[in-house]
Length: 498
Image (tube, rainbow, N blue to C red; front, top):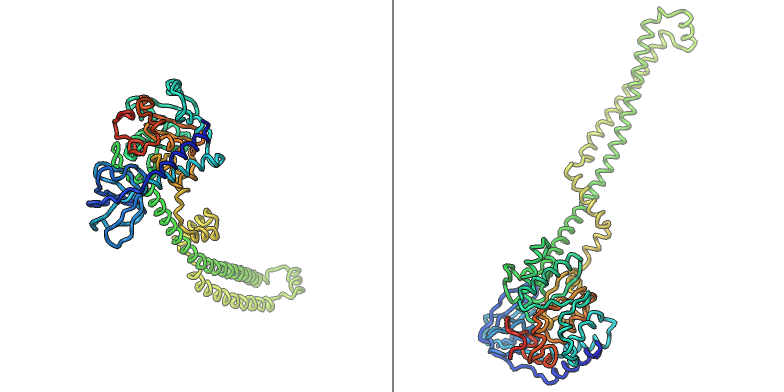
């Protein structure tokens, strides 16, 4: 089959299962306890009968016994009597008599709609790597070339086969670290939520050992069902936790910017007023300097007159006659001296007035050193951000929780195939590389749905023995609605076991 035919084939089968499935009966819960909360999400553990819900990632509703509103969520895991349910709505665990209702048809409907959309609008998805994967998933493909395909390795489709999961993950860790260094965006898949948590912990250890910032690189889309893996706390790697802390920091930075902007607006008119007073001070100082310069010139003239008067009688006759022609004799020199002294007294009165004005202006023009340094720092920050108009726009902008933009910035996103195929958020996201650990345990439709989000390369890993055997997980029974197919087989059990 071609890729569009295969997508249509799987979409039709999923639609048939949706039509055949029924909403599960209400499962009474003996007790409900909250495991953890992160941002708007909450993880509850409910005591329900075994096998009450068969599929991981199926939409569920928690119905309280009283008049409280039901809470919608998704089933993350069901082991024994413990059902791990992730919700956005709050419920009161102390109330008795909660019930769990799973909407299995909705799960099949969302998955079928995604595959049908991929077949109808191939230009909106990435078909190159998915086409290389299609022969592996074709239910009509002959088994004759299985061995050859099992050993294939290429730039677009790379396989990592080994019976030991530890060996496979070591190889995947090396590949992942190399992809991170090449700045690739990687979608990490595993068959179940517990398998995703174990893969997440292993990659966190691998990236840490490679001196890479695993806290900012790794993101677990759903809330982890395990608290720790490989010695790492998984809660801080959860998407909801990271989103909450990112916007908390963003709000903190916005509050700090608001304080800086307010202080800048407070200091600007103050320093502008002091700047005007400083200009006044400079003008008065200039006037004072001019007055004192004129006084100094007049004092020089008085000293010259005194010298001339003291030596007048000893001057040659021709020089005295020249001075008299200019109107300077002993009597007139005294008059000139009196005039200069009178002018000096007038100038000194003006100097005293200017100095009094300077004493008044000095405190008004004085700028404390710390205030000036603070203003210069704030001015530099406003300039760096693009000016006060840009800062006002930043402060006026709403803090909308853009989940898509935040997820698009994550380099390594770990998620289950069911959530990738049914969550609308992933319909708008694109990745460079897909890494599917324990790929033979992932249902073919869900693996193909994830492959349509990848631009460059697909890396599948697993036990090659799981490609064969009675069940033929990727082919004849890929539509089996049991938890061994859509929820992942228990850890350590072979895919082909009865």
